Amino acid sequence: MKKYILTFFLVLAILLSGCSEIPDFGSFGGGNGGSDSRMGLVINTFEPDIRQKYSAEPTVFRVKLQNTGSETAFDVEARLTNIDEFQSYSHPTKRFQKIPPKTTTATGEAPEVTWSWDLDAPVVPKGTKITFKPRLQIIYTYKTDTVRSITVMPEIELREYTDSGKPFPSDIVSKSTGPVSLDVDIKGPIRHYQSKITFPISLIVQNVGGGIVCREECTDHERDYNRIDLFLETRDVRLKDCELDNIRLTDNRATVVCNAEIDDSIFFGLIQMGTKQVTKKNIRFNIVYTYITDKVTTIEVMGK
Image 1 (cartoon, one colour):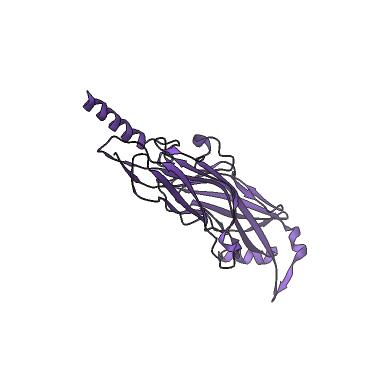
Image 2: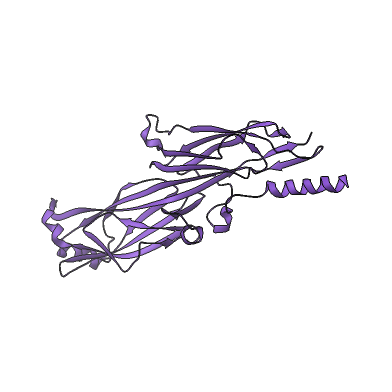
């Protein structure tokens, strides 16, 4: 009888060690349950003080977190999960109002944010060894911002580009780095018709952080995971024939193609460049989103 009881508790402990308080990232196609993101908030360290412990032995899990992107991370929440069998002496969730990026420090590297959790190892049957896999999940709000400059010319010079098939002159003015990248691609043909300048514009969004991207108000994983909202921050530019809300990323990527329209009243600000009259126009897009990344560690507990 004792043998059956021991076997029951051993199997139960193994099953519990694999349980999670949150859905597995892999279920939603955005992460791998142990990502190694180098963009945005990066978990540099998540490990126990000693990899092998005895039943109920005091255990410390140490964390080092760093913002390697160019934007500030807001509303940061760190959750310690898969610890149902541990005895915890502190709350498993830690919050930070914000964590600054690397560009705000003199060395160019953001300082690491460090903390630890104190727990007692699980109690396991005498003479057994069981491996447990605690998980650290980081949830935060981040922003990706891209500014592109286009060169606008009067109609006669625009026709030169249209007729010759030349690409529409444009330059990247600024582009932030983070777990989600945003590229703005502007090409011809260009049309100047009835006081309007029109041209196609492509917006390419990629999840490059190794985790899950979610809409800013991330309340429903089925509805909001792997989706983003794009924002045009330039008032006198209008986009047609496209939707910027609730864009779904497939295989961590989405492309939105729009027709952009600008009033030719901007020609009142023309400047002379050599023999041609041109004006520069900056177009700004951004994404504000929730991002989720995680890391799993292992600890072996021996019964005594």
